[in-house]
Length: 90
Length: 193
Image 1 (spheres, rainbow over the protein chains, first blue to last red):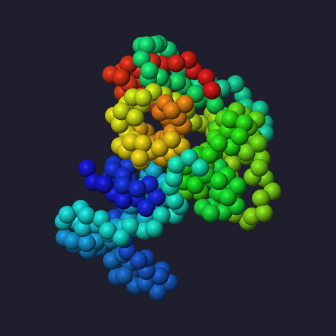
Image 2 (cartoon, rainbow over the protein chains, first blue to last red):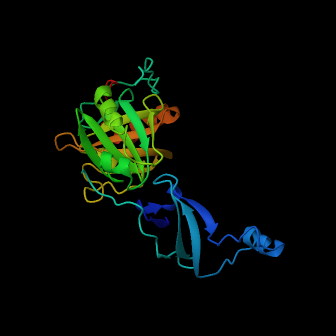
């Protein structure tokens, strides 16, 4: 089982999340060349090592977030800060 | 607040039975439930005062559950829930705020008993230990492959969990919970809020 560190929900089974692929900066549509668009839409780095990825916490907080995963070891690092804090009965 | 038409439970096949054990499953779908959405850290969040993952007794039997960032469930007796929701009117805020009567759209099941955490471990991957999900904790997760909101609200020290799901999954989830609870001597109580 792959435990994904959701910034809001904490560690979750990857079955509770949706994988959103590599995280790339979207080029400016007004200035991007066709080659840049093709690269953004279709080309992936696919490294054996650290990769920044998008994940969607579909069964939990329903938020998209990006974090880094080592594709060789499935370690995670640098999860974003939570958008809200968790706690018990207020 | 308009009167709701007669409520029809999503559990159409009833299984009321008693095994004599302490673990109890109850269909509480008729309970009045409202969904409130606003901004994280906004005026509504301050008024509802239940951060994500926690719950608060709002008085009159109403509970406010912080079910997701910027999302709350208000449930309980209809007049108490109406009072909480009415308290959001006139907030001095420009945030986009919605409040929706969810009573007919969501099923609500109660699981009560000391074996309730062990039963839930069979159908949900959350950590049900007291350290991770104490009394008052709220979470959203997959329960028997159905996305649910879950709130722990103990009954005089006995672990008790409220499980919300879309009403179209209600009968399936009810059956799945019965199946998961059989080995712990699950009893099924009469439906009602």
